[in-house]
Length: 326
Image 1: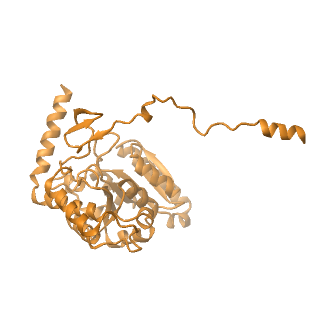
Image 2: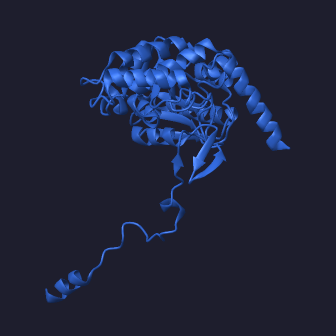
């Protein structure tokens, strides 16, 4: 007994994390002072900002800032409550209506944090035992949503429709062996419109064909393609001229082109309504501050009133791409 007590007294637990030197880059942040426009001050030094998602330059737009300031005076800073518990303001409903109208869908739902949007939407529909076919280059938010869903994940090679169809055929064969299980198993394809990790777009027309051929649902993450692709900035469906009703769920954050905070999902009403009770980020997070909802509405106004900004953006993208290629 005495020997055990001595061993216990001498025992030292391993540190939770390894020791990190004080000069490690992770402990020494780059500090931004002033507005993060195309010219940015980092650690007291002026730099050209190539590290921003402010694609349309609306972050410093006077109309957007004025709308946010007016909302701040009317509603205050935050909401201090989730949407289901006194956290729903009229400006939230207006933004959802405007987003649904802009995207030409039946309904939209907004989240207060962009990352949590797709990460909450996926596990709201896909559960344990369901099957998700996902591009191997998918962003981290999609990965966390898949992890939370506890579904059966099948990765296909990036933008490789032949590899995806191979997996779909294999699953079709498995379903024939156990039709009872197949009847209660839901199947999803999760892709990005414009991939964050690779910078290329998904072959959506081919995906639509596979959707109807193998009877699967498509979830489309458009955080980088919304406000960028398409004649009016509606994303990759407009870019390819595809009927938006062919997509079961579209998700995007408002922290890029709309220069605000949060995210949204849009689609048919019965699909969106399900998230109001099952989307964890929607149910358990304080709702979007009204001033940020007002800013997003004004950004939408600018996008609708000035469709030429998307042509200007594409011209700049082509120009810088050619310049960097040399």
